[in-house]
Length: 271
Image (cartoon, rainbow, N blue to C red):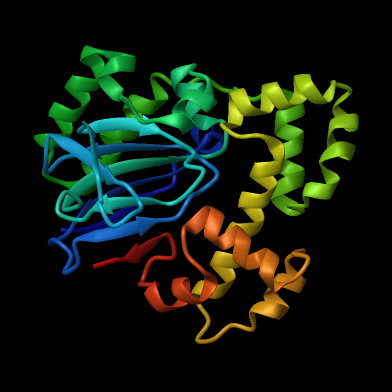
């Protein structure tokens, strides 16, 4: 039992950030809020025959999906059911990585999760069956990595998109998007359409998400945070601007994030 992480070797590492295996007792809380990240995810539930997400309101309406799904990047936080998060595996793709695996428009993956069997048929079903019958987590990760290597295509990103992602990773500034577009030699419309297809969101939202992620990663490890200073350091116009972005991406205020945080920056325990 435990949490195991595998960082793939080249060339898969250009498209996949990490593979993970989680085999742990059920959490003491029912729900968790999962914060958005810039890459898509592949989830394979080895404990139940479905995955579940819930609406972000008091009704907690449940949306059920197959046990193995691929989707994202999520543009806002999601609420998941910890009862199913007992024995589960996953793949965290780099921006554009899922497009290299599925060939799907990333915008479609961002709108809703897609069953892995809908994309790969019997090969996806056989993968989950093999993982179910592989008791060792290191071996499970090796099986999943081999399956990905046989199906993913490199390179996948258009050079203009790759250049923009590299720049926005270093400097996630919305104000620089126009200059980025000019550098590509493409029209704003063509570049935006290409970026959304391969990344799953427009370049401006991607820059905003990367800036939000930088704040989350900084704040998670601190005992207390001067939010006005954090806002200024990360290019927000003021603290109110930062609060607005937190509400949009995380569904909560920065102070609520600090109160709810647990051992993992992306997973916030709920009732």
